[in-house]
Image (cartoon, rainbow, N blue to C red):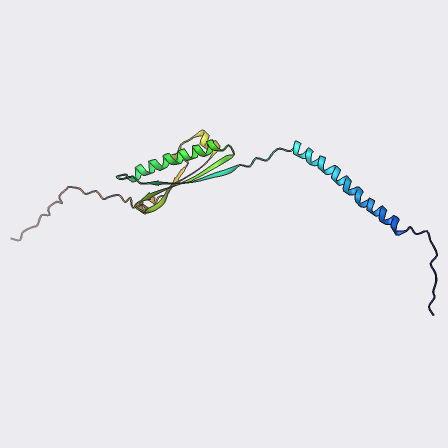
Length: 166
């Protein structure tokens, strides 16, 4: 009991016309998107401020102990080296906003950091002194075997008076 019937032509739009309309519907938004985004990108690039990429310059310095040099002299040389490195870092690159310098000293094969200098460009411009911005490592003297020699005095110990029995 199945019924076979022939389809009569109706007012349904053929598929070829629908596919052409669908293709145009897909192309129009794509063209509008491309035409509107490129000028919008140019406009934002022209109006927006440029982002400045600032960074911290990091410098590691190593100096050797000279013969017959004490710890205070080595420390003075380390401060001078840190000061020169900080000034050089700020002078070489305008984008450097901060400088971090570690100065290490080598003494008879042992090496240890003696100071670190961390300073920003405005701080350095106002006071370019390495001693103000430096942090000193307290244990560096002993790690580098710069122990203070005990001073010997030439005093003779007082003689104790012994009482002699009578």
